[in-house]
Image 1: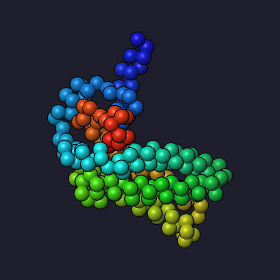
Image 2: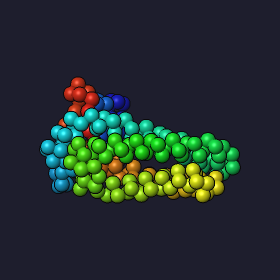
Image 3: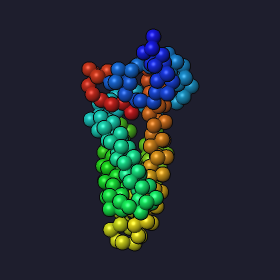
Image 4: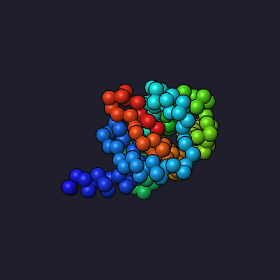
Length: 199
């Protein structure tokens, strides 16, 4: 009874796109009804290519890893801005976050090419890619300012927060898109089908 109640509550807020892998199937009938009026995010062929691409799993690993790095780095940057301490660690954490961003952008472009036939700006992810360009520009601007010495440490930290704010918006876009994809697919791959992570 208790586990069923917990399952019901989690199902109301669940946006995990990998339900089959983690053993959570959700209320497929309800999802099917809610998604019937929406245009499909993937065509049948695109869905097959998505599930077959090794880069789907790579993205499924890198996305939460980058988010974890972001949380740690944001805490370090805010701590520095409040206390004035830990500047070196805060700066280094933003560099690590930027490297993680470059990695997920490159592999994400390869994934998009595998699934949609183009490296960027596929119609299904056009606005996500547009905001990703802003995120990439702000992170790259941080690196350029750090390497060139164009900004002092305080202003570097403020630039990092601006980059992180854009990243949060972009991450929210992708979470919503993943939610849409899940609502449109009643049956998600199981762990035994091959560890392909559906997006």
